[in-house]
Length: 640
Image (cartoon, rainbow, N blue to C red; front, side, top):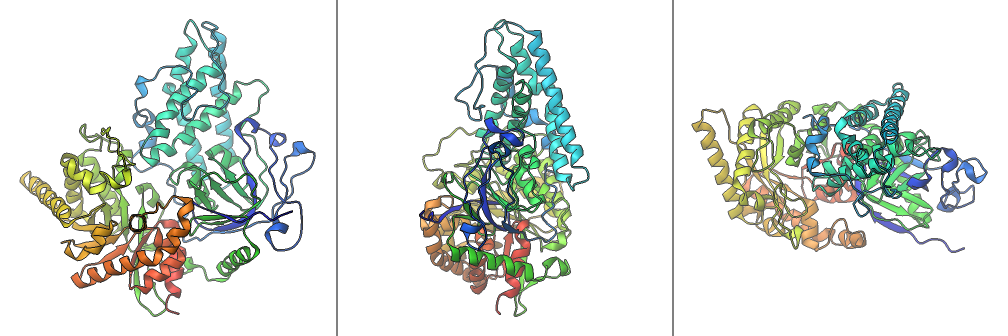
């Protein structure tokens, strides 16, 4: 039998680390249930040896007549005291106000939506049965039973280091306890032509889920999986004798789970004690499942696209964001060497937390954090880093508090408080806040414009300058917060020095308005993000206080190759020297002007590219918390 050809897919890193093992596909929704309902997945039927043939197994459920064989995979995960961050909800209470977060709730009405995104694959057609008190009672009982299941699952986690899981289950319980969630379904059951209880519930939940799935903000989209989880849990209770999707599923130890997406309860019913990894065709790094994976050190990639149906084995590289299916023996051997090297190296957490990162020759390297949400800082010690190098302020759309009607953003006071919280956590270290990077594929609230080419349209600073009223609110809040620490403001998607000058003028205006009103304020350092080749080539012409290199967009704009396009991965890799040369020009421009420069893109988390960056003279990088330990290790060995 011919060996399957190796196949590579790129994805977003939801949890770093390395793992390899046979693949195990999550059963489809209609086959969920007890152990006897697990659908078989394809694998090899051999034993012994060291290559990917011999490590594979044929994983089958007990309904096939045989016990599940133990898996034989390997996994490893970096730890630096940062993986157990309890970022279940952000620090502004957004998750406690589902009705506020859900767009357009009041405009929905009950009805079948077979074409709606997120609709249930087996949604029954509503039958004209008339008002049925029995159906109403059945739905009430189903919701109560679903709540009891959640409570039982939470209780089971009490002694199992399940703080994050318990918070997520508490969030789901709060959703089920909210009468407005099921109100449309109960209203439908009171109609003269009433549907069945399950049809009413599914239609109501699909209407609730759809706006989340279509929301431009990733954090809102990620919450759809919680609603889908609840939808299916209650629906299962309404099917007499039907499968319960939340009974324990027997995932073989050490396997790499493949699925389109994964809900929190599916993750929690799987046994992760034997290690393994997760590769999702869709999914989100902001999802609750991603949080659970991080809390248990399970390497996880999302957004990798559909996987071929016949793959048997996978190597998951949570450092480079790559999964290799059916790798060749030499690839697997090299992967194993990396795992062995990790096990033998000294743990970085043994170093004093406040010891700076240094190269082998003793040069200090500033090591900063990228954050998407202040909740990521929860339970982190600020001493693990030198500050926050990139705080993406799009999280403001999740903040609770009074919103400005013109922009949809939290008002000035609310924003000021958020920025002060970041400074308080940093405890004297610098905090760089990137102004809103919206537009294109992340539409501005209230803006219905359709971009022909989103990546090259109204994005970042371009959009902020087009809507100065909202931009001034953010600038005033930043200037007020700057009184409390080393706050720096970073401008995204800048092309020309004139754009930077226009933003600087608006910052001057914001300061003038605050001073006239007697409000304490301070001018924060104003920097430019070098992610457009035109700006990178002319960096010295910007009158910026500091520079930040956005390697993600700089790479895709320089090479005309989208980072998420799996078929262009080889082009991205081959074109790296060109991007590196451009980055080198940026570093020289900053040195000539005597201004600090930092890189805050994925290139800093790719170990090979990080070595190249350090060789150019780059001495400040900003990475997600999950990558701190690995990056520190690479820095420490550089120059040997």
